[in-house]
Length: 353
Image (cartoon, rainbow, N blue to C red; front, top):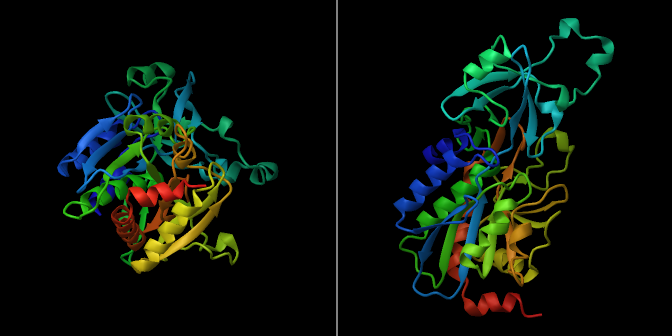
């Protein structure tokens, strides 16, 4: 879990993925894979098997939801804009890091104490546009002397921890550092494993603001098939009121539908058969309220069979998230089995209509 800890605790929102890219580059290099990048900053490692039947792309995304400084007040407070989808209600009183070229600054998203709230304010959902970050500065000049400026990224703070069940991981940015982790662990797991394909495993940039790296990365290798490695919403906490269709610890998550894609059904069925053949636990998700990089992958050029694989996550797009270690392990097993089971004939059959 040291690698996942490093990935989740590093700071990298959309457009500012540099720290994550360095980790990805280092870990891909360790496998001996050839490193490929696009001009947006996405990165993959190319690793060939015993033949070159199929080009398989396995990609998470490096960016996490965050913010950008949009205004510095005369009293030294920072107003901010969201990078990615946030629910305003999860923000107040949370600690954040303001990242500059030379230094990191800790701040807090300001909130009124309950002692001075009016009855109307107590029942009001406070809008993000009225929130501010307090970094302890006394003036705009002080903020500028510290090197903070409009356009700097702001990230949530949450240390990595494995909870007492020795399975539940608590960390920020599981969406989608877990996807980065899956790509790296699959690339490592394929070493010494026989398969007839060429695998491109890594991660894109700027997924949270419009699947932007997903539009450019496929042009680097023109894959025959693609798997987006991303998270799904776990439905096993009390807020889902008995809807327990997806849960932590119950296996890899296969997405059958989201707002950006309906996966290739033959590819989908192949993955289900592969999981069952190898006794790998899996779950099925339909996520109508969000999309993934596969939304861009599957319409690359004339179209490529694509799907989303990952793990369930609680409390996505907030300062903290939870996932299951055994779900991650089972997803890596499934990805390796998929790579071993694919060949040219099988992939061609997915697109014979």
